Image 1 (tube, rainbow, N blue to C red):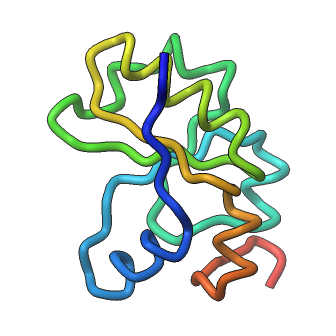
Image 2: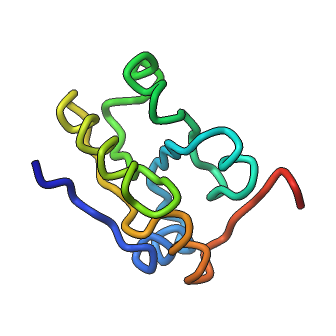
Length: 107
């Protein structure tokens, strides 16, 4: 299966313009506390199969992880389950490197 990927620079532009897609961060809780994209939903990767009902199938989801590997797998899983989903290529790391807004529990 080929999973669509969104590039950080394009997503940052959309985000700054107020066109904010639904973001699903699939990282572990300690990663989420360190840094995250504001407004993103957090469900760790291993909990997603049990928590699909929390996600709106009418929304288009961009799945986020640290570097884009886990999010690619999770986006593929969502697509197989009837969701519209893509993966953030380069993850939150590329988002932050390109100047995307972040927040943290430690700031």
